[in-house]
Image 1 (cartoon, rainbow, N blue to C red):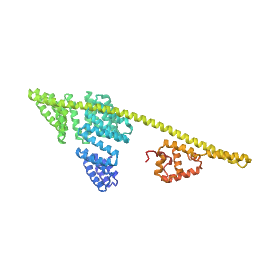
Image 2 (cartoon, helix red, strand yellow):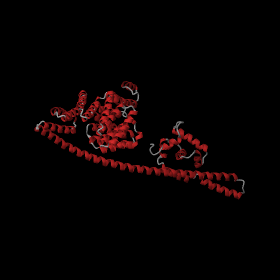
Image 3 (cartoon, one colour):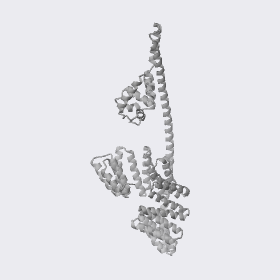
Image 4 (cartoon, one colour):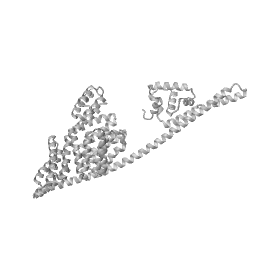
Length: 556
């Protein structure tokens, strides 16, 4: 069972740590953005009072998110700009990227698509650099939405599919369902209805498994539109009615209104005009109740076109003029363009040529403006296609470089291990010979004894020479460039011998092999290991070999 707002507020009041407070605010946000804003503002005041510079920008970013949810875009941009100043000072790249993403979302909602893309692409590059897969997927989804709004469906599809290319199995199921629904919508716009249907079905299956009613309703609505495009009107109507029932259960009147327009459109196609009109009226009533000019405009437009089809031109004009006013308020010029065309035809049918020409002129003027926007859209689409191809090439080059570097590292590691084992075997052999000669010294004749002592001295010279160690150390540094430097800086009490032992442990040698290589006893190596663990302050549960293996050039 999900937490209620009251439960979350109680937890928030009891929270002692900043991270816990911000995590609880994230849960409160979807339930009540206004209440989340109130609590976050008080939290920010506290952070400022105690000069918690680490958490101030995160609180500001959260407050910006609240303002975004409440459609107060100027306040959102102001808050995120202040947060970005803090993140820039602390060089927090993820924080900076999150700021760019939110700024992009604000521009997207405001219909400022060029600015939206600029910030979203910056955010994407930074999230990719940090390998933040969750935010990479969310940002790709936002970029895809921009191109959907621009009507650049092929480019939108490229970005949607990149989400799945990253690692579909790593995605949160609820997020994956959203992305699949978006891909299905894009294929539907591209008129590839079979693929659209497959993605909608996958999304619906995930939402059903999660018992996500809102997600199920969203997919059912899209399936209804798809079946209507296929002229499978009975199935289309069934899907829309299912979606409507779920939205009624959820109390989402905004979405209910649009579903009523979709149902009305199906009845109109079936020439059941009275039922069509009833559904359009239902949408209009909701639009008026919740004061949504977008919904009212859509309902007026549907009613106007329905009455035009029925030859009721005067009534059609009344509805269409109301629709035109709503479209002007919401800035939907493409809707105005279609409405002016219908109004011109209505007045022409009524024999008023002056009025017909007036709306025809307005229609033509908007047509030129929209044509110019379409040209800009096509330029943006071509630019985006170029950027996508460039990114793909760069990604391929980077992948090849990584693979080459990995192969070189693997070869160097093998070479280092072989060198170490060769030294171990040499010392083992010489140590054995030394012991054998020691056993017979003193039992032979004086001359033989001198020869054997000379041989013994030569063997002694060959065991564990400094040259051998220097050769090994040089190869070790080639493979693990900064290991000894990092280790000695972090743990300055380590002796030179202990540093040697650490290097050999990292290479993968056993205590026995290390003893042979350094020509010390196994017990001495174990003593060194104990002292090293103590100096590194490793708990009993920690593995020394694993710890040393994790240290490298990125350990500082």
